[in-house]
Length: 252
Length: 289
Image (cartoon, rainbow over all chains, first blue to last red):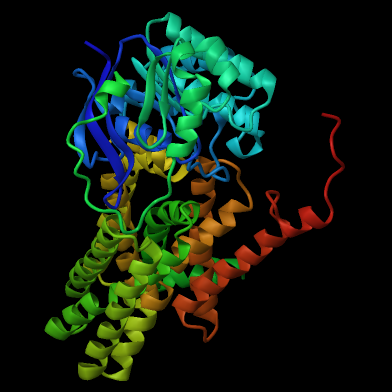
């Protein structure tokens, strides 16, 4: 029984599929890299997993978990950085599932916020407003909030984009820590060396699954070339999909 | 002398005391809502909503003359209808909230002016457009007080989701369903406070005691709680000073209050420590680290 199971899932916008006929199973505690060219459907897949996008067909089952219990880091954060809120308050949003919308933030919660800030190297930034942070510090702050969410499943959409090597390495340590704690982590990534070095499993997407399994077997030159070819353009006049046999054989 | 100017009018005349009570209550409810309007970049939405309540108030006026309760209820209904319709259209279709609101409020404003001018006199139209803070009766004062109390309680209840929706709406959606209800409750608060302001300041200036104090507060504070305190204080000061100004001059009270608030805004724009103009022209020397 996986933490996350896809049953012939098709996700897309306006009837046009962006992820086509995905079936498979993410084992509980897996550390899975989702790779593929731009437009391959990685972000769309993640939006489907966290319940922000309803599948056009098929189902995504979370084996009893609620989609709101997934910690999700979107690729393009819609954060108003001019909003007058301190780093401490921003990070404490991660406690929402625990405290609810009215629950108080007491000594225990303050301590866990402090610990999360310490874990991402932002101790001393508590009172700064979020508008004063650099890009890397911003990403560290978002990771601190993910830490506080204490979720069984963590979904990271291109978490290391435009982030320097030191920050990526620090944040990658957190990802490894989550993996060691038995959490299920999915991350969309472009850095193949990083994927090969850190992620045991990989899913190669190109609007439909190209390969899914052990990283070394997925990221072969043939598969990567096939993924590049398969990322065909959005066809305005595409016919209704008649493929009934899902590509699960390839994706297994 | 100072007593005669600052306290005399209120000690001597009951209508001035009522007006002061009305303006103070208005400030307590309206200014914090105004701060959120500003932070959500919805200041002009508040203005549009102020026009949207007009047909409801006008229908109330048609049915029962210059009865403030009837106009309040009518205004609330019209305001809610426009806010909810605009919100729904924005959530369901590709149209953004500002465009869908513009369509509904224009329709609403035209309808309102039509209704008032079919039946009313020019004086009625003036009352609707500019309000009359010097003619608040007991019922209206009570209605304003109830609305302000409701505003403060509801704002306290939805404070957390509201802040989260302002700063990171995607995150709020990923952890809670409270975003949409909080947004609707907030729009309801906007309508309630506009109807409040409508009695004192009329449909054209109703939003003034919400938006101007919020703008003032932005120049003096960096965090949201102090912003709300400063906004309330500056709304109270503007209301009081506006009433005094209007008492001793020919300026009508509504415009007088807003003129004072606008003056305080200009001063803050110049002198405010947070991105005020003088501070930008003559910056303090930069620091070591």
